[in-house]
Length: 363
Ligand code: MRU
Image: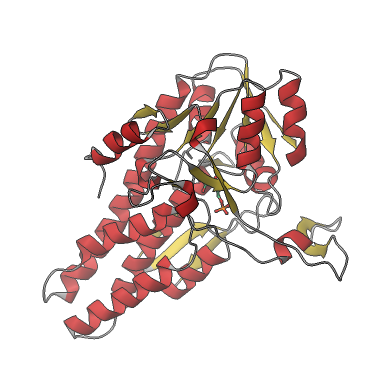
């Protein structure tokens, strides 16, 4: 992605450190966070320094490689136990995104070379890097397929941040938008602010501004207004986990956008790599939904007039809050799922066919 006219990935690894764009500070400050061990990486995922399903997957992959690389002992069985414990620590950071578990399984399946800690360490790093590179290519392909849906002069609504920041690069929902823009199509993006953490107004808007793609941030409750006025031609969102019947878990508020799109006869697309499909999950009701701290609802972050980034309370001292981070959009509201292999209808038979045939995938 372009930042100040320079190309960046969201996350990368050098020696045994993992570097990531610190998404807690955007859009006010562009800073790279350095994680020096897998526990710091797990904490970075939990605290959302790095977030978004494919980016969490890459962080998990690199985190496991980091644990392997930093193991200091000489005993192979002990090394295996250490890497297994790191797998569990990373896997338990955020429950909804399927890509995390998928990426961890990929790296783990490639790591162990019997009786050679040195070779196992090398394999772990190579597998994590392969995973991250593969993820970029999947997102680019999603962009190419999704771009075919976008016509000149169209207005697109997106929710949360499913951009390059949510992946290693390109994005999922933002990838077709990026590619349409690179192809000189004139498009306009309505960006839902996405309370409570405002990934739309702080991250998606930041990415679009960097790429000079026309957009406007709208309050979360304004989407229906613009849809009814005929201002939105279609909706594209990302996904954290897709069940085999086509139900999709994504950022809280996605479900109501899908219902509104349906009411207004507006196509509603989900963009996600096949790694987001959970072959063990039959329907949306089986998807674990993360409940995050009530502080995310009760407080906001912003920059004051002196330029200091601050957290401030926006609600009564006595009021508690509830904060489910994701919701599930039933398949019946989804027009199509844009994957690296093409656009899939959200129906069981078609999903099963695609997921069974993901032979290009690392897993
Ligand atoms: O809580 P977040 O910010 O990690 O949630 C992110 C989303 O819901 C994204 O839409 C999803 O992960 C798809 S990212 C390409």
